[in-house]
Length: 353
Image (cartoon, rainbow, N blue to C red; front, side, top):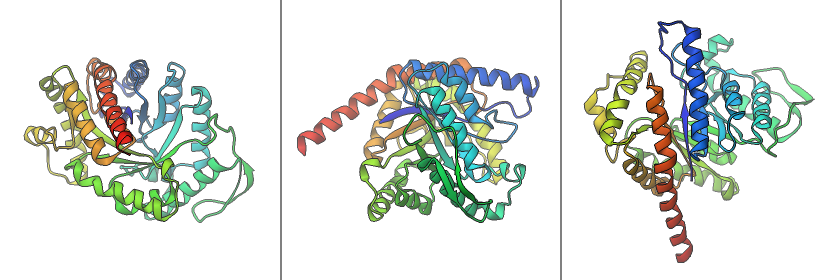
């Protein structure tokens, strides 16, 4: 199983020191975080796209390209690309270029997006929300699969036998579908034979297990090659030297973000009691010392059989030094424990086969 991180590049929503200065510092820190994740042996780093004052990454491919020049092995992914309000041609070109810079380490994680600011910003009608994603995903896959493209739809002008360049170093640029738990989206990803990433940011993770069964069954019915199916869970959490330190460091920034977004969406406020329940054995937060987090990752991989695990530690205004220490512990302590346990599981399965 691949182990990695993702973030949206949080900044202060009011930027008291100036948006340019705050953005410069956060981008600098982001690149340092990606560089460290590579150095400690993590497999993937994902950077999400948002168009709001509280996030710096509206153009993830550019930041990932800067990180590509300073890393060697780690895969670099969007998390997510808001495909519905973007141009699939430009998305492909940007990530194909990233693939060339990185030596074949680029990926696209495409989704509808959890916020809607990009739709009016780029001139799209929210009434076309589903159709935009469906058609643009179809076009993106057509570009990925063929150098010259002929395509038509209702949301943009057709393309008639036009080449899209550059082409990536990888034979097929990986394209994942990010979903928030809608069964129809999960089944569609399976039927199309595309990898899917499930965001689990609330409730008990175990209740999402049927979605993985649905994905695999939809793929089987569509005749997809089971060996090419990949799944990921993307979760919130934090790692520190002690579980108490992890909880105390993470609670304030994470609660501020969840309450800010909650006010926009009509959610009830969170509190420390909710937080402490969520970081328990059956909760959605993967938080604690290395042994605690590793045990929780292993237990859920045995449940979901997921191929990838992405942890969002940099939420809100987390101090950079704490994030860096969390990344160090993730790569040097948590990852070896997880890999050892899963290797033992695989050996036992082979013996019993």
